[in-house]
Structure formats: C-alpha cells, structure tokens
Image 1 (tube, rainbow, N blue to C red):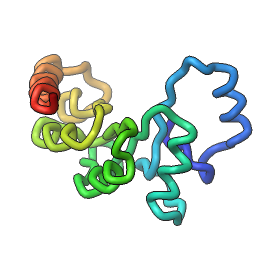
Image 2: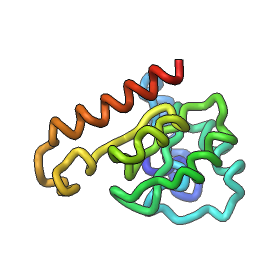
Image 3: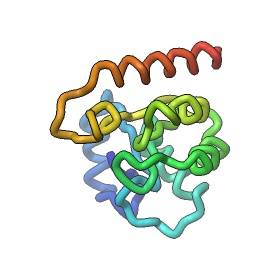
Length: 141
C-alpha cells in the first residue's frame, strides 16, 4: 500500500479488510512518493504505521528517483528491529548502500531499459542487482 498513514487511509475499511484476510502481508508506505506529508514527527508516523503492516516501505520523491540514504538512516534508527524496505530509485550504483540499511528493495523501472516501463525486463540488469544483493547479505551474516 502506498500509505498506511491515517491521513491517506480509510481506516475502518482497512481494518475490516485486514480482519478478512489475516494471512496477507502488508508492505505499508510511510512518507511514500506522491503522498502528502502528515506534519507529524517521523517517530509518530512510524509508530502508527507499525501497527498496520508487516514491513514499512519508503521512497524518494518519485518513480526511479533515489531514496536518500539520510532518509533510510532516520527510518532505520527508529525501526531497529522492524522490516524496512526501500521502494524506489534502487539501481546498480546505490543498491549496496541501500541494502546495508534495509531488509529489502522494490525495484521496477531500473530493470527496464532506459526506465521505460513499456519495455520488457532486462535480465542482465536483474542478474547484476542480484549479484550485489547476495554480496550484501553474505557480508551481513
């Protein structure tokens, strides 16, 4: 979900859906691309989101735009033991640093030549990213 923050969510409907589908894991956006700021402290937004999802996802300003390391550091500091996913702007030049701070990444437009979502996935780009992801995971163990 792009946002699990109350300002973006029909909370009653969301709670009913969660109760109806208890086995569905929710990756919930906090301070996600194209969503309006809540005006809350980050700590408040994260506390609220933790109660609504199994992992928190955050992004930079838009599709394919790198999520700032400083943002991921701030989230990780407040979520030391909660799954954190980077949801935009991951590419070959930043995946190592991004995965050092997060538990995973959602990668879309990087896998398409020139970021063109209408083109097929470039298998070589997937392989290159996965090689680095495996390297990060080995170094974290």
